[in-house]
Length: 141
Image (cartoon, rainbow, N blue to C red; front, side, top):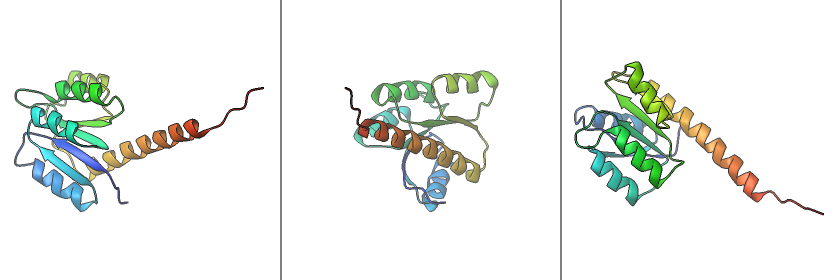
């Protein structure tokens, strides 16, 4: 399976993040990597992204705060949280904020890719359905 999507990856882990980027790019995804919430917000404003992957625990602006700001800019953008904190309260908070998934670290790169693919498939189906509804003609009377 090959996906054609642009992903915004926001993670302050400078050791792991380039490996995530490289792996996802090897699967055909375009990945823009930034290392802070501030840079993530700025980068999001500059382009179009099909999905955002946000680390929860970052200095200055955490992933939860960034997600809320991204939702204000684009209410429909899907996002996945990555976090070393996998406790129930954090997962619930992330999903309550509208996350499409919450992936605890450490994780399998293949599993992350499959979760991304699932979210993109679902979002793609929703967009197709919305376009079909917009294109529908209704005759009254």
